[in-house]
Amino acid sequence: MRARLFLLLALVLLAFPALAQSTNDNIIFDAPGLLGKKGRPGLPDVKASPQAWPRLDPGAALCRSSADLTRLAANRAHTEGGGPADCQIIRVATAVQVVQREGPGRTQVRLTDQPSVAGWTDVWLPEKAPGVR
Image (cartoon, rainbow, N blue to C red):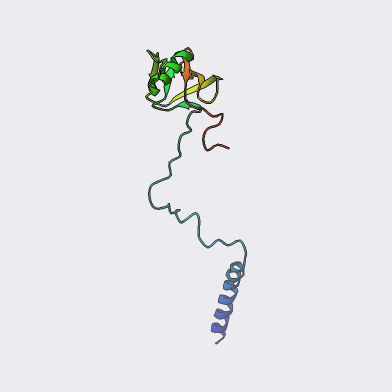
């Protein structure tokens, strides 16, 4: 009987430190080092690359001079004052620098990647990119 009592007392004394640790506030139950993190289902998020601003989008006209821009506008409106206009249509988004403005529909720009190329466009280019406050 003494052997059983001694064994029971030994078990209680051995279990007491484990019981004392279970009340500790520093215990982490999710075992972060042992369990892998689960990813979200579906495709991963892809961050959009920042777009150049200001820019001329495809379809914008870039004319060599302000007079060419005026002739292009007359040709498009089928009014007098038209004639040959030295203009090109932009095919890919092109970064530009604003040189000067003559109202909302007449802006002189210089191509960022080709600084020697400058021209006039009828595209309104606000100071800040759309969606930027």
